[in-house]
Length: 276
Image (cartoon, rainbow, N blue to C red; front, side, top):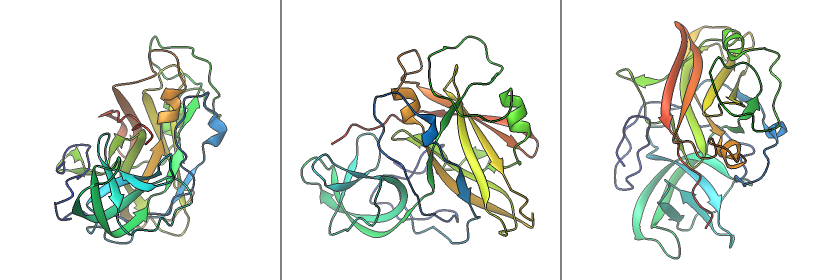
């Protein structure tokens, strides 16, 4: 798929011509399972600003392991890539930026076989439920484990957030902000001094889990330059664990505090692809 709103470039034959960002090393991003979600798995993502140019990348994938132990890339809900001759350096499932070339039809369950030219993992964390006033009506009281924020409402929580802006191309979120394979990718920009790591968390309302709240803290970092960062949040576990109307949302709404006030962005939810 060509570069588009809230999407990623997926055509293995397209060359890589993209804006500059840096990928980061991910830690834990385990596969989603249909069981009660434990929000204690949620961890703060600590980030520095982007330093390198990643115009080499032509896709964002999930690096997954099949039930038989084969390493492969989940490119989108229907497309799987078999990385020929590639040794997986990651101990856990990760989201990653990759530059690859197409070698033809895949073998077994994989759609295509590819040659990996370069790959870098992305900082990946779990999102968590919060049980605070989200200002929305209706909703479900489905019992879930919740994370504590110290705030009584999502409005207070966002007001405490250090401002940021989702990166856009002519006013439209670029190809690196999207939901796919049960993850939410966010490409954002703010002021960085690169003295102290920034931290970000993604929270979902317990009653309205299709509403996601990005909380950013600059942790006192000296604000010297306008720079970008990239993070992936695993959100599928929050929906697969539910047994109500939010079990399989068609879309999600991202909330964040910008430099001009609270902003929202509705994105199509990309379901977790089935295990192979």
